[in-house]
Amino acid sequence: MRNPLELSVAEADMVDHYEELLDERDARVAAERLADIKAHRSTTVPFDEAMRLIGLSEDELGR
Image (cartoon, rainbow, N blue to C red; front, side):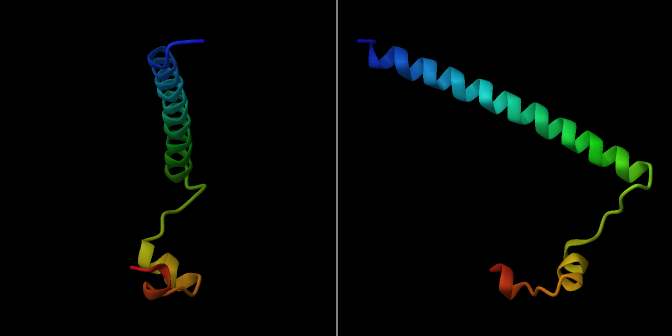
């Protein structure tokens, strides 16, 4: 049976690695979105305007 402390360190290392993978993916997605905006393939919309366009109020979002 493995020492619980060894398991905790191994689990923490797995979590750290998983978080690194998520950070890399998030950075890639952010770079792709920024490139789309700069190339005019996408536009940004202010939050309140987006809510209005889809018919939501701030009360419905729990704000």
